[in-house]
Picture 1 (tube, rainbow, N blue to C red):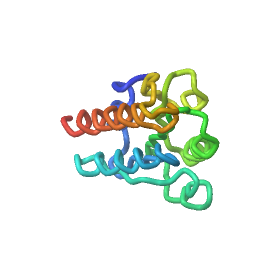
Picture 2 (picture 1 turned 45 degrees about the vertical axis):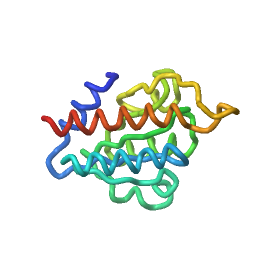
Picture 3 (picture 1 turned 90 degrees about the horizontal axis):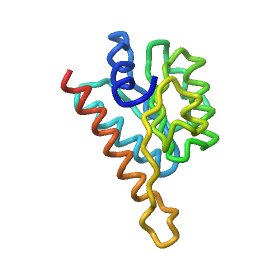
Length: 149
């Protein structure tokens, strides 16, 4: 399944003691931290786990029933892909927040919420500007929809 509605359903189906783990690296990691904070402040138990740290011992706190949201615009960041596999091995379901359904991260996760393709605003078109704003907006939409149910 794919899309925001499927992601909402996946989080809503979590057992009562479960949490949402939001993960990413680099600028996507900063966006992931903000999403974890928005989820927490709107009533969805959530915390941020850096994808690199997840691969070096922090994943022990992830339990079956948890849902991991992995943030990577390219959908090809090695640490995020490895973290997705690790979260699944620990029994978590995974949601990809990535550019499109065709990224490796989308394939590695149970659900993909596509961000879409965005031209970055800096003169080199490399700094995550438009893509970061789009990801923040989708993350906030997810948090708000979950808070209203």
